[in-house]
Length: 451
Image: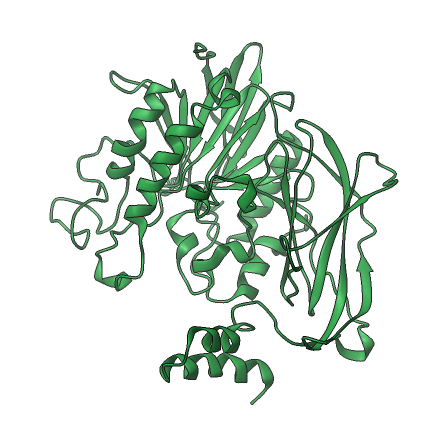
């Protein structure tokens, strides 16, 4: 039995034997993607250590995440500068305080202390580690990318634009087409509105999906940050239960202690637009037998309600001329036969098409009044794989756009790229039909009245 299989099987045996948590975690560490032993690589570390381009994640006015994959036990870092010549760069290592995050899969570097709406230039690097024990570790090599990238942080002085992708479901042909269109549109940031994946059981499959996808633009997320609103599929599978191993949270000091576990929510100001990210979580109830009591979406949605109530009052959010919210599962649906996601205990009732949530009535009740009070103009959702638009109506002053499906070949479930940008004193939202290559619809929103 090779070493990797031995550790994986040891974790299973440890759990079955009723061993302590520390012993189980030690046995399972490498299987979970947190390597605990390394020999510095084969042939003295001659193989490539850095195996993907960087991916900018979860940015804000004063911070950004940089993720990339490696082939061996390593300590990754970012060289950051305020000039394109990379003079006098600042070096930021992966991990938080106390110790760096040595592992043999993914380097997650959270860059903090930045200025809002400011351009920075950066390169990535990694030290190859030989680790034999607590007093027997050494750096056996170093690798730095020669490519210099740049990005602009969020803030009121940044560009007033965004793009939205959703429901890619591991279809790299669709992802490639979306990425090519995004390069042309050049938005300030991109919102991944969920179900990028299907069911990911290993961290290797997550790396292939997010950090090293099978598309020509390997550096698709190296120059503009992606923000994540997870879909129901993004929580499915052993690896996806801890998606933060490849798609980082913000650092604890960037959030209130109450909100430390809400690492995927975001409230970001880019130019004249405030962007709010919410996580509708699973499309099945926690009581559904298929989940064996191992999901906790109900309390998660409640916690986000308290967070949302407060972030909408932040001056940079409250004073933005435009407020756009994002979540994967729609909050509005007019078809009475579509399952609203609150049919206890197992999501089944004869009057509905599906035995899972087509839309989220619970989240609509929790978050809808807050969005209404804050004069939100637009909610962009996904999940149904069919493009749809819901105009504002009495009691709901915000519109809802539902993004399309995942297949470029489908006329009905075509993928969409939603582009929003402020032009001539209005927010223009353009829905691109990726099947035909044409614009499907365009909507305009006037500035909301400031408080």
